[in-house]
Image (cartoon, rainbow, N blue to C red; front, side, top):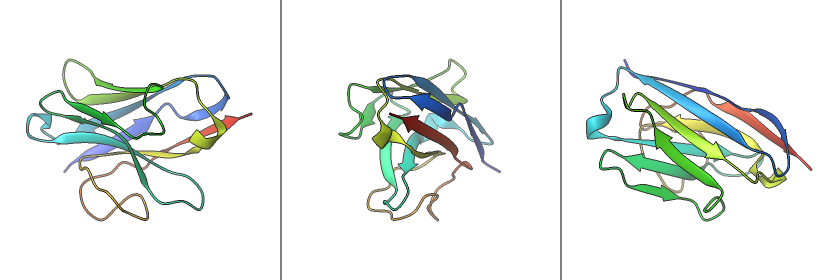
Length: 123
Protein backbone atom coordinates (compact mmCIF):
# COMPACT_ATOMS: atom_id res chain seq x y z
CA UNK A 1 0.00 0.00 0.00
CA UNK A 2 1.39 3.36 -1.03
CA UNK A 3 1.42 5.99 1.68
CA UNK A 4 2.41 9.61 1.29
CA UNK A 5 2.75 11.84 4.34
CA UNK A 6 3.30 15.57 3.93
CA UNK A 7 4.68 17.89 6.58
CA UNK A 8 6.26 21.30 6.91
CA UNK A 9 3.29 23.55 6.30
CA UNK A 10 2.23 26.32 8.60
CA UNK A 11 1.84 30.08 8.86
CA UNK A 12 4.50 32.33 7.36
CA UNK A 13 4.79 36.00 6.48
CA UNK A 14 5.04 37.17 2.90
CA UNK A 15 8.61 36.99 1.68
CA UNK A 16 9.38 34.09 3.97
CA UNK A 17 10.28 30.48 3.21
CA UNK A 18 9.02 27.01 4.05
CA UNK A 19 10.19 23.54 3.14
CA UNK A 20 7.56 20.89 2.66
CA UNK A 21 8.41 17.21 2.92
CA UNK A 22 6.63 14.18 1.56
CA UNK A 23 7.67 10.78 2.85
CA UNK A 24 6.65 7.94 0.57
CA UNK A 25 6.34 4.30 1.57
CA UNK A 26 5.18 1.24 -0.34
CA UNK A 27 6.33 3.03 -3.46
CA UNK A 28 9.15 2.46 -5.93
CA UNK A 29 10.23 5.82 -7.23
CA UNK A 30 12.50 4.27 -9.83
CA UNK A 31 9.52 3.79 -12.13
CA UNK A 32 7.36 6.77 -11.38
CA UNK A 33 6.98 10.43 -10.56
CA UNK A 34 6.38 12.49 -7.44
CA UNK A 35 4.52 15.75 -7.72
CA UNK A 36 3.28 18.61 -5.57
CA UNK A 37 -0.12 20.18 -6.05
CA UNK A 38 -1.94 22.98 -4.31
CA UNK A 39 -5.56 23.83 -3.83
CA UNK A 40 -6.46 27.31 -2.75
CA UNK A 41 -9.94 28.11 -1.44
CA UNK A 42 -12.43 28.40 -4.28
CA UNK A 43 -9.89 27.45 -6.93
CA UNK A 44 -9.04 24.33 -8.90
CA UNK A 45 -6.28 21.91 -7.97
CA UNK A 46 -3.02 23.13 -9.50
CA UNK A 47 0.17 21.27 -10.31
CA UNK A 48 3.02 23.06 -8.56
CA UNK A 49 6.01 20.92 -9.41
CA UNK A 50 6.99 17.40 -10.41
CA UNK A 51 10.11 15.28 -10.27
CA UNK A 52 10.53 12.25 -12.51
CA UNK A 53 12.65 9.19 -12.02
CA UNK A 54 15.02 10.51 -14.70
CA UNK A 55 15.66 13.60 -12.62
CA UNK A 56 13.72 16.03 -14.76
CA UNK A 57 11.65 18.66 -13.05
CA UNK A 58 8.87 20.99 -14.02
CA UNK A 59 7.20 23.92 -12.31
CA UNK A 60 3.97 25.82 -12.62
CA UNK A 61 4.35 29.31 -14.02
CA UNK A 62 3.32 30.92 -10.75
CA UNK A 63 6.16 29.33 -8.77
CA UNK A 64 9.04 29.28 -11.25
CA UNK A 65 12.13 30.82 -9.72
CA UNK A 66 10.68 30.67 -6.22
CA UNK A 67 10.06 26.97 -5.53
CA UNK A 68 12.48 24.06 -5.89
CA UNK A 69 11.66 20.37 -5.86
CA UNK A 70 14.23 17.80 -4.75
CA UNK A 71 14.54 14.39 -3.15
CA UNK A 72 16.76 12.68 -0.64
CA UNK A 73 19.38 10.10 -1.57
CA UNK A 74 17.14 7.20 -0.59
CA UNK A 75 14.48 8.57 -2.96
CA UNK A 76 11.77 8.03 -0.39
CA UNK A 77 11.29 11.69 0.45
CA UNK A 78 10.55 14.58 -1.86
CA UNK A 79 10.90 18.18 -0.76
CA UNK A 80 9.41 21.42 -1.94
CA UNK A 81 11.53 24.41 -0.95
CA UNK A 82 9.34 27.49 -1.15
CA UNK A 83 10.88 30.95 -1.07
CA UNK A 84 9.61 34.49 -1.54
CA UNK A 85 6.20 33.32 -0.48
CA UNK A 86 3.21 35.43 -1.39
CA UNK A 87 -0.30 35.53 0.06
CA UNK A 88 -1.47 33.94 -3.19
CA UNK A 89 0.51 30.82 -2.29
CA UNK A 90 -1.88 30.15 0.58
CA UNK A 91 -3.33 26.71 -0.05
CA UNK A 92 -3.34 23.10 0.99
CA UNK A 93 -0.34 21.40 -0.60
CA UNK A 94 -0.51 17.75 -1.61
CA UNK A 95 2.05 15.21 -2.64
CA UNK A 96 1.03 12.69 -5.30
CA UNK A 97 2.44 9.92 -7.47
CA UNK A 98 0.91 11.19 -10.68
CA UNK A 99 0.91 14.20 -12.97
CA UNK A 100 -2.57 15.38 -13.88
CA UNK A 101 -3.92 18.49 -15.51
CA UNK A 102 -7.32 20.05 -15.41
CA UNK A 103 -8.46 18.53 -12.13
CA UNK A 104 -10.91 20.48 -10.09
CA UNK A 105 -10.23 19.05 -6.67
CA UNK A 106 -7.30 17.57 -4.81
CA UNK A 107 -6.82 14.80 -4.00
CA UNK A 108 -7.87 13.30 -7.32
CA UNK A 109 -9.20 9.79 -7.79
CA UNK A 110 -6.22 8.74 -9.90
CA UNK A 111 -2.84 8.06 -8.36
CA UNK A 112 -1.87 8.08 -4.73
CA UNK A 113 -2.10 11.23 -2.62
CA UNK A 114 -1.16 12.39 0.81
CA UNK A 115 -3.49 14.10 3.24
CA UNK A 116 -2.16 17.57 2.48
CA UNK A 117 -0.46 20.24 4.54
CA UNK A 118 -1.76 23.77 4.98
CA UNK A 119 0.40 26.73 4.03
CA UNK A 120 -0.86 30.15 5.06
CA UNK A 121 1.03 33.25 3.91
CA UNK A 122 0.10 36.52 5.56
CA UNK A 123 0.83 39.95 4.14
